[in-house]
Amino acid sequence: MTTDGGRVSLRRILQRLTASEAEIEAQELQRESVESGGMPARQCSRGQVVCVSGRLRTVVYTPRTNLPTLEADLYDGSDVVTLVWLGRRHIAGIEPGRHLTARGRVAVRDERKVIYNPHYELESPK
Image (tube, rainbow, N blue to C red; front, top):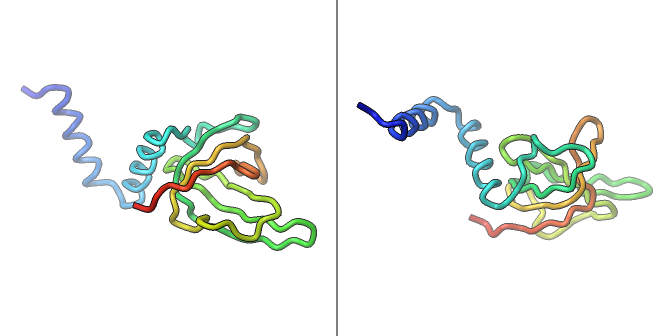
């Protein structure tokens, strides 16, 4: 006879064996985000002040004639939130693959979640 805990462990083992590398990475990022005190990005909505934690996927400098911007896509395993720093060309430590926690008010631009000029904390490299 097995216990409920035994079934759960077996289920987790089977999920890890059959999951793709991307699914495993997403689950791990979601777990790390919760441990860092972050709100899942998929639950963030327009106008809400949130704290999100995850890994930067892309960082892009967009030169504009009136206002340059630095944009970074933060992925927490559930969804992406784009972080936008207005008037910045470069920020030390903001680079693809870096883990960070960002705080700010969520806006929606082109059907994407965006936080403008977020407060952020870089996490130490693992």
